[in-house]
Structure formats: structure tokens, C-alpha cells
Length: 461
Ligand SMILES: *Cc1c(COP(=O)(O)O)cnc(C)c1O
Image (cartoon, rainbow, N blue to C red; front, side):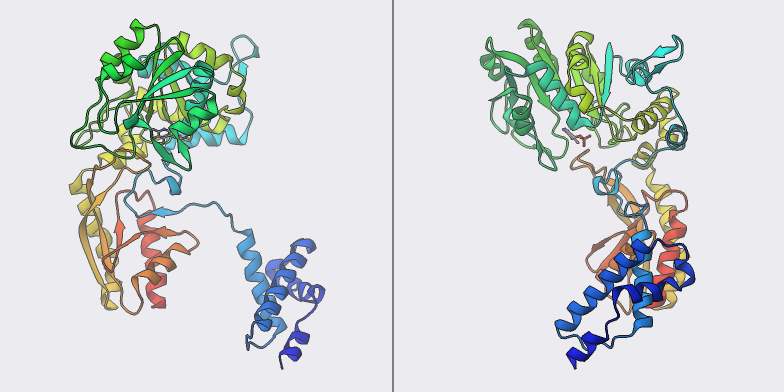
């Protein structure tokens, strides 16, 4: 029987020819059809050899081949609906861009741009000039530089300023950011020698003082952006550390991680980037797509003399920022400069959304999902704690709202999966046998997408 079924599998070429007759596959390159047919028949053969009892039907195989090609055609990277309540979800691409920033990206994407052309002088210019002055004005810095991401910024700064010399860091700040980016490892990669001081919970100014030697290049601080030390803990004030560094003729660098340009209010006591520079830090670096709310980028800002070696370093070319990120950053910074960030930068808007407004939206969404209630589901607007995410504001819960669903006829896990596998995936979380749809991060059109998705999925239950 098995032999018979195996023999009934059509040849790759004839399956491809059969599939090519379908309307949707008119114009599909033959190589693509053949490649899909080869995968289809080889997987069928494997299933049969593994004992599958399915019948071999060429028309059905041709249909499967069509579905396979549809999957191949669909972009792997696509828009999703973030109903997790985590604003800077690293797995979901961190910050969504505002209108101005997205328009700026689209404008340089579709055409040519003066990326490295000085329009005033009519000759070659620098890609770093476009946002440099804006950053200096916004941050109160002497100079600024933008690279591919903040990990690149840290690597470039340490390499250019401290390779072959010593860098003093508190044991309380030997951060791992994720994706194997650890301060000690980056330090090793840069060629700088890490000198750890203090204890995990406490580091004193005298610990830094004792560690300074003729080989010291700089003092380094890393913002503990994805965890918090609480209890019997202390670090010397950054102002005192700056005085110490400058007395000894050293630079003080700080990796701020998130780096916010404006205060966040509420329970968040993140210092702003400007405050860090005013406190005496010579060079700060931070991400463009965390609390700032722009595209992926690493921003370095501070003293001109401190940035000069970075601008000269050959590594800069390998870590350089592209035109899309620059456009996204410039559009975002413009909103900050004109005092419009809280309305226009989605990350700011989402972080600052008043609880009453979120409650109203959750109740509206619950009402629109009334058809599920009619099918026996439990649908309820509930208070939920959102998070900044992306390794920002650890331990800070953002009071918010969402809709809790208790499905009927299917499990929560299955519901979550069905929503996740849609053409426009809806990502939610499960807690205590309920599916939670947090409304904080829903963008224009997302609520409709959620209703549509649950209409389809609820119908399948
Ligand atoms: C997030 C983070 C980084 C890495 O930034 P990317 O922009 O993701 O490269 C580095 N240091 C700290 C402290 C961070 O929080």
C-alpha cells in the first residue's frame, strides 16, 4: 500500500505544470513553481514513509502548492498589532515612528537625498551634519555624533578613547543588555582594560580614587537600565565623579541606555540627557529607538574634544548610520525641538496616556466585542499594568487598561496562537486563563484590526 502511494506522487515537473494552470499563478516564474513543487512532493514522501495514511491527490497537491507560494510571497517582516501593553517591545521593533518621522523616511527612501552633499557649498558634505546641531541645541552639548545603534556607540567610544588603557567601572554597573551585549565583553572587544571597583550593591568615590593609575583612560558609568538595585545600595553622585575625573585629567563617560530628552513624570525618575551633561559627564550615549522614540540609532553627545577621536576613528565607517535612520531621527528631534513630542512621538504619547482615557478605550473595545459575549465568552474591561519595556524604566508599572477575554469553545493558548498567526498578527498575553488585550499601544486602525481578528477567530471556535 505504502509503495503504491509513493508511486502515485506526481513528478515535480508535472505537479508544477498542474499548479501553473491556476489563475493566481499566471506569471509565476517557472523556477519558483518547480522549487515549491519539489518541497511539496518531498514533504509528502517523508510523511508517507513515516506512516501517514493520506491519499495522494494531484489536484489537492496543486492547491497546497498555491498556499505554499502564498506563504513565500508574504513578507517575513510585517506590521503587527501590539496589544501587550509593552511600549518599547524589543521583539516588536521598539519605537513606532510618528507621522513626521515616517514621512521623512519615505521621502528619502523614494528618491535621492543630500546625505553626504553640502548644498550650500556645492560639494561633498558629511552625513553627520544633518542632526548634529539639532542634537546640540536639544541636549545643551558642544558636539554630537550618530552611529548605527547604542551598542555601536559604546564600542566606538571605548575603542577610540581607551584602547590599550584602563577604564574604571563600578561592579554595580556591569550590565548585560541582552543579545550578548555585556559591558565587560564590549570592553574586551574595544581593547580597553576593565578595572572593576566597589561591590555589587555599593561603590564609593574612594573606590574610584584608588583605582586611578597612570594607565587610566577614563571613568565609565553604565545606566542600569533593565534592572534596579534596591535596599542597601549606593553610588557616588555623578557630579562628584565628574570632579574626580577632571581633577585627574580624565574623561567621564556614561552609557545612558534609554536616554530621555524630557522628564517622564509619574513614578519615573529618569534623569534627562541634558541633566547628565550638566552634572559634568563629558560624553553620554543612548539609543535612538528607546525612550527618545525615533528609529534605530546610537547617539553620542558631549564635549568636542572628547568626540574628536571618535570622528577620526576608522571604526566609525563600519558603524555608520544609514539615511533612513537619520531621517527618522531628524523627524523625531524636530518634534522635540518644537515642543510637540508629547503629541507627536508615539512612545511619549503611549507612556503619558492618562489612565482615564485608557479606561474609556478599553470599555469601548469591550463593547465592540459584544458579539463574543453573545457566543458565551466573558468579555471585560480591566485595569492592567503596562511597561516601558526595551530595558527602560525597570520596575515601573504604568497604570492602564485593557480587555480580558475568557474564550468559549477553545483554549486561551489556542486563541493566542490564532491571533498571532493572522495576516496582521495581533499579539496579546495570557494571564490566569484569560487573554489580555492592553489598549495602551494600539495605534490608529489597530482596534478595528483586533475586532476583525476576533470576528474571524471567534467564528472558528
Ligand atoms: C539598550 C542598551 C544598549 C544597547 O542599545 P542598542 O541601541 O539596542 O544597541 C546599551 N547599553 C544600555 C545600558 C542599554 O540599555
